Image (cartoon, rainbow, N blue to C red):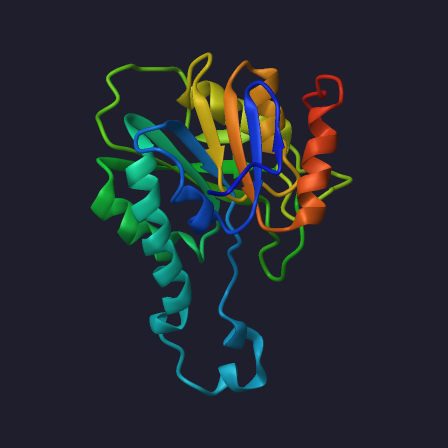
Length: 228
């Protein structure tokens, strides 16, 4: 049995491969999964030969294989009224959507407007995508649109660190007090920190020990400012 690397009253952090750790989580024990998995174009995307060789969608097969295994575990551990929220981009979205389509009642696409222009070429990046999947129809209505706003983190502790303001909004939208949140790709610990500040329980899984230590340090800090 894999033991938590760190544990406090409502927070547990595991060091390890998320597929291995999730296998030990009880069935129907998670209310909401919020995560930012590694996503990128295939390694041969930018090689010189890519300009003359035919590329196919099969280049993404390693990502698809992993994601199939990931969804099998997610379906087992998440509650019937639970939510799955995944950060992605316009390239990775078509890779994960078929599995989401097959396994969930619906998947809604949210655009995160970063409120400033980032790196890029002819079109410089200003957005990121977020998928919100669930098993049952959502009866409640809200005044929320499908675009969320928030500037990226300036001084990052992790290359893919998300603003706590965005994570808190997603947690509030998809869970209730004392619910259990899971982040299988914890990174620097933003999801655990946001869950703690909002009165939720949280389980984080991270394969890099350096980031696990950073996440633990953040949990010991005072309540973080929304701009962190």
